[in-house]
Length: 365
Image (cartoon, rainbow, N blue to C red; front, side, top):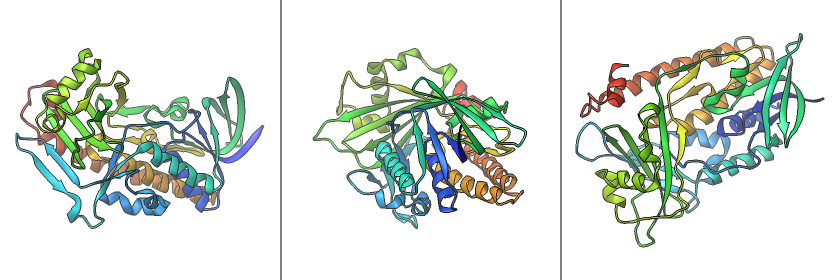
């Protein structure tokens, strides 16, 4: 049976950041990732306040055009009919960035390999058991063959599904049913859109759009899962709804290139957290522990920051500091309470459709 001191289940940003932090503390780890290779994800914009965190991991060096695009700020229609603007030029850390997520995560992967982090890709977590010495026996499916690993400490970095925590019987607190319908579009070659993040509230949810490298537009419609109209899964009707928005539609209405290869993907986007984010020789990190509404722009920040704190908490725990894991939990729980207050305030700002069930739910919560 193969053995590793720390095994991380999930090779996304949070899991990899945890492994990098452990490596810098002199602790080797193994990442078990279900995908056989680094896969394309929905693009993301990182605000300027995330840049110091990127520098900790050496990721700031990969932020160059044209691989990634400078983001000058946000333009939005929210709480009224007029277009509002928030410019990043006045921020201490300068502009933000529109990420090519595939290249960003490939760079993060290479950084981890440079730090001797081991990867086991194309292997799916099946089950786990804890022995009398509180060590773990982890069974994974690797290309159709079961394989067992032994580890002293496990990390759940499997996203909102939190597979390890589920297996351990830990319940999840769900605050809403928000989902995102994401679709990339090609733009006509002679048409350019200013590099902003565009956000627009509509009657039954809200839209997010941003330019990504390659003269493409990534659009995401966010609504509650039970309110989703099946018509929005049709690419033509999706594009029609996008074109009818005031801010985003005016920018792209006549410049989106119809492509039969365009696919709408559905992503969970709700606020949720585990009722218990650590236990005897395990913890959860990233979306597995605390998941955020995209309106907060906490995605990459929470993944990297969570990985940084998780890696240090694990290292301290392995050194015998019993307060390390409770402190990790306390800090994140406190921050999440502040986030929920901020989120409630953000949705309260939009009162134009207060009788619509999507907005009514958020005003009453």
